[in-house]
Image (tube, rainbow, N blue to C red; front, side):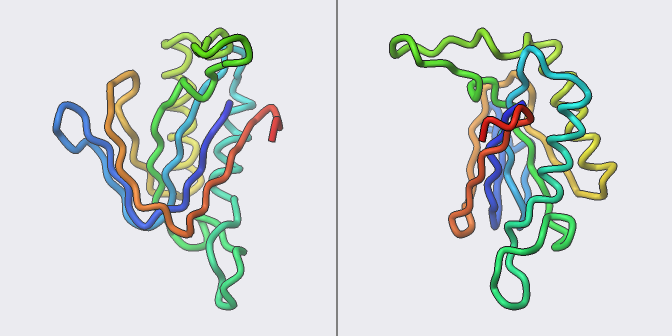
Length: 149
């Protein structure tokens, strides 16, 4: 499982000119599910997202997590995080999960984040979406359940 975690002051998702989700201060997480991902990856990724210490403490140091600051999280599915361009310029998506599995595990990550105590919003799986965000910092962190980075 791969994710791009962005600390935001706000973010929203629009589908067919209709806003389907928005969030205030917290995080926007683009989430890609790999074809070999399991429940273990769900738990790992949700724990990383909830516990990532990228919010400022009283001294201005990045030392607090979403849980510590009661931040919201907007999770958006993005299979293109598994795009492989090692051979040529057109990405291949062989390592991405098929849609049914992708949607199932994407939903489970959102559910696990809620179980951990976060306010969670989601995009629409498989939809063509426009995502708007105000990146705070900017802070952008790459996450991988395979610990690629």
